[in-house]
Length: 113
Length: 115
Image 1 (tube, rainbow over the protein chains, first blue to last red):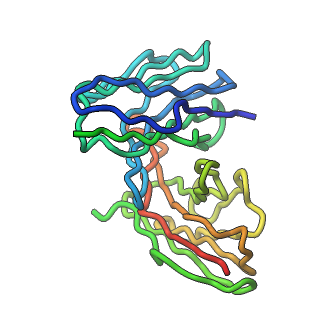
Image 2 (image 1 turned 90 degrees about the vertical axis):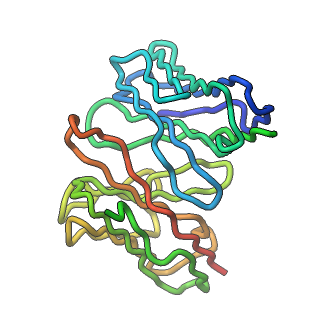
């Protein structure tokens, strides 16, 4: 059974700092991995999707990497801003059959002025 | 283009009562999903559908039923609510076309409290 772990559970950083969020998964037979953002009381918004054949994806100040063989992904946020404060979730889709995702429990990020 | 919408936003039930949560999407997506989110547990898949008229069980299906009579709608039913079903429920949808992207789009959630 796939298990997805995100460490740390919570993180507080000063504005402007570059930071890395970590995601690890136990079964490397994945189809893709996604990073989502969730604001308090809201639904999830997809940030980046990395296919299993890719090593990284970039969108603006965000860069996600994937090392499938070691079961790890990182989300790099450059020059953090207070508006980046949210919970970040990673989710993996297993290879073969259906777009079913297994989610991590998330990292709650607070960027302080 | 409203994306994924959920009705209601919040509901309080007594143990044993029934209710239906409605999810609607206007993106012509084939796949739809129901998740629940609980503190410390992450999102867990309840049921999903790969097309109109089809449904399948996810990770935590017990106590729930679903129906997909129309492509744009996915209903989640609780026949006899239990306090353990207190949670935030999210609906999501996705395309099957890899060129369009396979990311899942989420609704705003329904908060359910079972007393």
